[in-house]
Image (cartoon, rainbow, N blue to C red; front, side, top):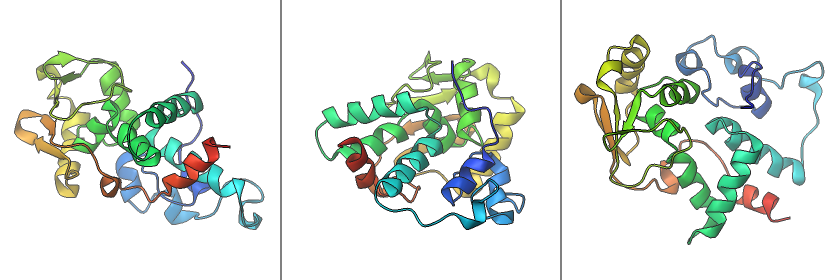
Length: 208
């Protein structure tokens, strides 16, 4: 399976904002944005202002990298959102938020989405009592997401959960930290998305 293997801090610098791809490091003064808040590369400091198509592209790249998707995965998710009832942009963000790897991260069982994907792929996560090892699995309203009993002593999970308790979980999720499980109380709304994004630009980009 293809995946991005370069420095993820370069992605944050390219988009000019924190995408929280490195977990706890992103909340420290070691974050690349804090130290070098300009695009990577030899001419990063001198890049000209982007307009038109470039703005739309950057918005798409920002969302794609925030949720850790490759181009084909993102395009398929957009096409699914387009077929759903309602506003396409909001449907897209709702589908991305309800990906199992994102839900595991939002509940605090992993410090980053990459770590959450690894937990899911290795079979540490259950949905409604059944093991699910597909990170792109879309969690439905009312579903219960839990860490397997044998994995609850995993130091990565325990450490991530401690950090999440301080930061809290989104309103559309409900966390039971003592039981290492959470519930999707309601479907995420547009205001529940923490990323500063203009999803209309993504719709315009794919509509060309």
